[in-house]
Image (cartoon, rainbow, N blue to C red; front, side):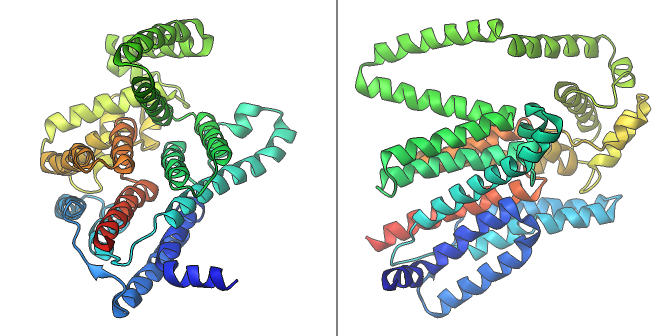
Length: 412
């Protein structure tokens, strides 16, 4: 008991920060009050001189992005929406300064990793818990245990990001000796299963690419470069065969090709004939194309909070007011940012994503490489920085990793 109390005394800051993952993933409405708790704990640690200020310069790019959104409010036609966006993105200003500190005695990432993993597993468990009575009633596995049905608190794409970073967290816990080999592989198995059941395209691509890279590195280190190349060629060949021999994958590809062909034959006719429940490929194709049209007309942006207005107007003009009422976003963060706050906002976002990846490679930080790769890949398929889960998580986790590395350096 005394040992536990002593651990809490030494690492109370890390434990409070780790607890934020439970709130963010499973009780997002409590995010505001919990951030206030974090502020108070950090102020207390400054007062006790257990942490010292160290500005994280890279994180200021997020603050700069926020400024671009704040300037864009000048042209807003929907002040309520614009104000809501600025409130949601306020952490882009707050976090770079709130988490610009280091802990000279050493900042332990172990509670942080465990916090993310356990919060993710709790979400998975809750999804299964509410899925069981659903299955008893409907007797349908896809309806009760796939996609959003297994991620009741947020979009599956965001949940797949938490699962991916939980896998990386599990690896570092294993590497540091905090968990045994059997527990490590068990955790990875459960998290991979969760990602597969979420059926997020970007999530599936992420674990596929990560798994392939890790395995190829293993082959190169264990055998030789020639063996690695040979295995890569064989794997690609098998993957192509698998794609065209697996019915649901083959059918999905053919459906996407047919959808694209029908759209380009007559975009307006395609939009007019959309069903009330279009497929994800139909939705993305329409939203991407009309977003490009609006960007061509407004290269400097339409203004903060105006994206839904301009996209909706475009769709109505093409003859489908029902689809316009759904107010789908562009399903691409780069297009979303370009359309909303213009080319300067897009440049800042590119510095954050591609610049973050370069920054991570230079620091040789595996966690940050995966984090920024995830942001980059997911931003191609979803507007990742529009909802609280994405807005908060990427910046929060980045700053925690930076605090850990800076504190480790200062403790030496």
